[in-house]
Figure 1 (cartoon, rainbow, N blue to C red):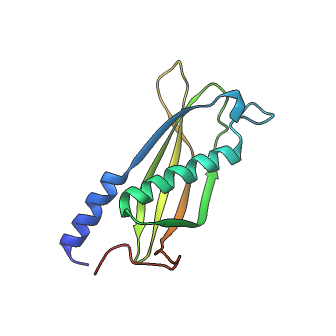
Figure 2: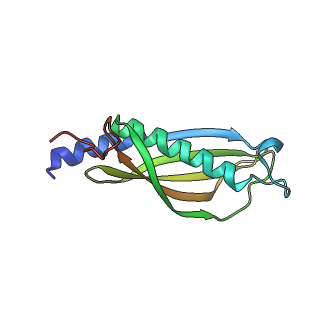
Length: 135
């Protein structure tokens, strides 16, 4: 790819970074009073989809997830921020990394506690893979 195309892709990546903040309420926790893993995954899938769509402005489907790492429990009553960023761009597919950062409500600082990758394919009106960019 030419440097102009690389510059356009880099700009689209920066413009598509998505951030969503949430409070972990008791309705989203498990029997340990920590964020239920399925809820975390749903939030991550949503943020990855928003990020991928903002990047491509194409119809997309999630085709796989990988490397979902839960490194620390997220207690009820904390704030989380989900950050999505495109990390790979192919001809018809792209990969989004999503990180969840944990913040205590009443003290400074934050820590990355979950991260994972979500793979998408652009599809046409018939559900067939289509290029992300016109040639």
